Length: 377
Image 1: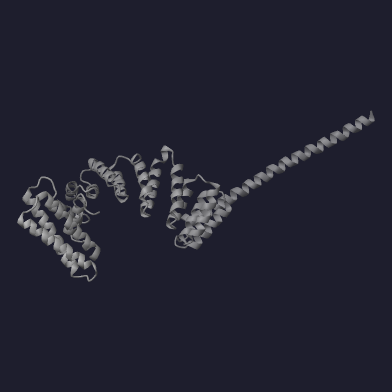
Image 2 (image 1 turned 180 degrees about the horizontal axis):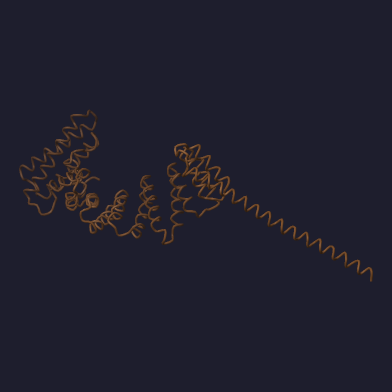
């Protein structure tokens, strides 16, 4: 019996000790956690203070080292805060160390690969570094992340930025699909259609560009940017009648005056235009040859290269055709086609020997020749 009582006392004592030990551990855990929480909160407060000093405090924005130091302290106290690390990358980049800024952003992206802000910042840095493929991929990542309807405005802005980047790097092939996608995303506002039309012109899609400018004019018929854009697009398409109509309506002709002059020269000089009589057709052919002859003579007087013989041969052909015109010995339509072709070749040869034509009349002859079937391209 005594043995059982002794065993019970031992068990009770051990139980009490275990209970005390467990209670001690629990208390220690909560004390440690509270202390850690207090420490973390203190670090976060310190981080926020350094961030505020760097961004809204008394540090001169031009004093990059001081800003960078403050932001590094913010990041050290709160390393999980993406806002602080993004700000640090921007400050480091502003100081001229783009490579270090890229390293910060790449490390941040490893922790948060789907953060559109990080990918956009990287895309912009890589765009400046001329890494076209990497920048394009980052822009595309951003667009894939901004799929929610609430992000529509931001998605449009990023897509426009990507388009401008591609166009600046001569990548119209990739820019055009993005432009087509944008047609379904932009609001039905004149300014939006104009911006899209201008980029389509830069990408070489004059037909869709004109469509956008026409939509803009339906909303605001007097918008000078829409009129100018529609005129440029029509000119690029070879629709000089429409180009003249739009360009003539532009209130301020400062930027479009020369284009309008060339357009008017084309309309006034084209021997193959519709609804003109035989006499007018012949008169225009003669005028083209005369204008091209003046340019040939001017060019020939300034060169001594082997091209001189070619220029003189073309000039002789022009004189011979002018004689034929004076005699009236050829069908007006055939005469017009022959004359346009010869005048075009004269202007093209002068371009090659003496540089691109500057006078609106000479540029008009080249455009008329481009439109003529069989003219050299």
